[in-house]
Image 1 (cartoon, rainbow, N blue to C red):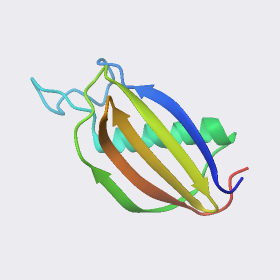
Image 2 (cartoon, rainbow, N blue to C red):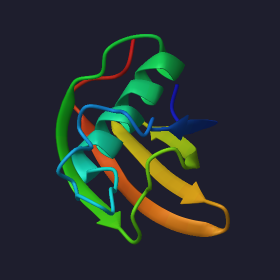
Image 3 (cartoon, one colour):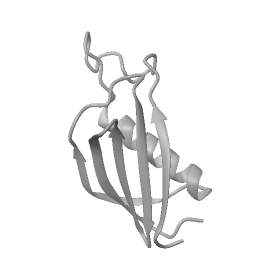
Image 4 (cartoon, rainbow, N blue to C red):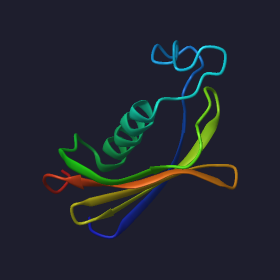
Length: 104
């Protein structure tokens, strides 16, 4: 499945249990929750659980707000899963997951 690409969308509900306290009065989606959702979308696309060996690159350029719809681009190249998360024309996050083994 080397060199394949997939585009999808995500939205974190405003009542998600990870949001209270992050930050009161001006909530934003925590980066760890965003990364978790990106991995879930990749697993749905690739048809099974992924073993992540590392996250050597990750940049968060702007916050994702609760209820905001984002576009996610996933690209698989051997054992590297690249991702981009955009809201409108703005790139809000990008990076690379290293996988422990080839997806199922």
